[in-house]
Image (cartoon, rainbow, N blue to C red; front, side):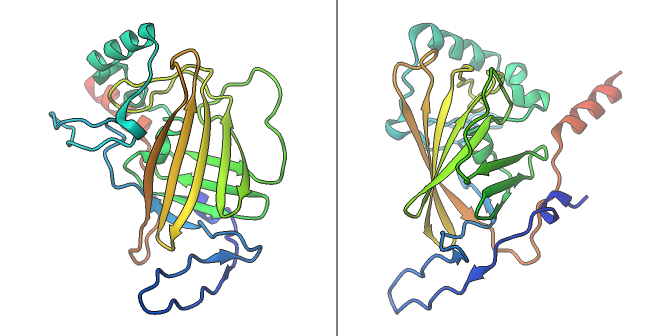
Amino acid sequence: MRYGFTCAIAAAVLVAAPIAAAGQVPASPRTVDGRPNLQGIWQVLNTAAWDIQDHPARLGVPAGQGVVEGNELPYRPEALEKKRRNFENRATADPESKGYLPGVPRIMYMPFPFQIFQTPDYVAIAFEYNRGSRTIYTNGTPHPEGAINWWMGDSRGRWEGDTLVVDVTQLNDLTWLDMAGNFHSDALHVTERYTAVDADHIRYEATLEDPKVFTRPWKLNLLLYRRLEQNLQILDYVCVDFIQRKYVTSK
């Protein structure tokens, strides 16, 4: 089934990008309001979904280089013990194995494509994984008040030059950061930065602060790659449907 959400948001009109001189990197396109145009279908080419740190290959997990700057997670001692238990029980304890939305930032480096739409007032992201979606408001509105916790949190963005900076709060504590048991609490605060390197690459950075779990802020750094296949569309991967079918079949 085609993912109908992609038809629901009108894409901003591109301003034609100038032709680059020989030897120069082509300029990134811009929207009609002069912002870097981040629209398109993107995907990571890394193994962060399995483990955000350096890790060897194991059954069902490809070896990979981490996306954590410095490759160190500053866990509090009691939180590190919980991470170890998570890893030991990861096959059944990982919330993703139950079909839940993976939260932010994990959904940004799941091994599935996602599509970005852009207007002057918000940036919307439609994910193939579990029909997830995010709306990043860039119109100056604040986070809602109250003790609210969402799977994907609340996202408020602003432009710092050519970088989209997104403040993500009000996340619940029911998601992990990867399949290796790295986790967070409901105190997680994420600051994302989206910077167009060129027309086909976005530098994605996320600073994570969580005083209940970590002793200091730490940072993820990775690339998003534009998918360039003709007629490419976001399709469906609704994992909860597969889990329910498996349960019914096994009865």
